[in-house]
Picture 1 (tube, rainbow, N blue to C red):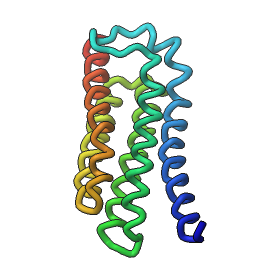
Picture 2: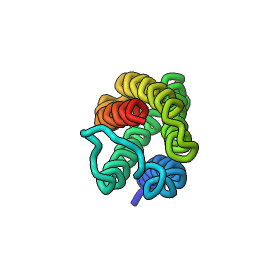
Picture 3: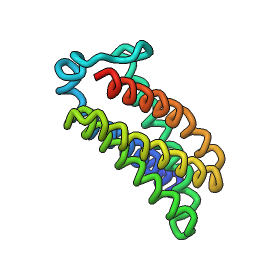
Length: 161
């Protein structure tokens, strides 16, 4: 294997691991609330069972990592790549922050505020990634769709409680 091929594999792995790390950070705030506080809340009729969330998020973080890698491979010296990666970083921070605010701090209204900002940051990321590598933009579509559902769930939980 050529040296550059080897480096590319490491960049792909690092990209996916970075995104999975955001999920792990968020899950630290989530786990303790799932069986107690969250369980006791009134939830909208369309709330998926709890077991769905883990596999969905693992898949989404993997797709996010691949999208990150595709943009990163276009070259960090390009201004549009740097800006797109900064926006991606912002949405990744907001992703973890939402779990901390909603589950960790039990902030239903504050969580709704964060997830709406997250949704906008994801859209901004998709637009920027699309201009660099259309595949990267497409890879984030399932993410924004799931966050759309999560936003509706957050709003429903807030309204019902």
